[in-house]
Image (tube, rainbow, N blue to C red):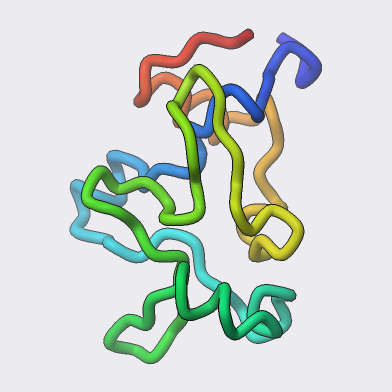
Length: 112
């Protein structure tokens, strides 16, 4: 299926900590690197970023393991509150990629 068949504004599956991370005990999902635009937005850093025991910044997750910046219902309609300033890890996600397809399978979301 081509990337055009995937509606990221509906999906949001890649914004959830993957099952493999959870099984291995990883609670850090997307790292916020020093070069990322988000680092220059203190108010957004306070709202959406957590620091781990290694003093690394990561996007915070809610109790359902969703990114704190994700709003809406997975598979229906979602939006990212920090889209313009999202970290480089988020920017690397490609619609229809193996990681995208795996995230969609884990969340029960079919290609649109």
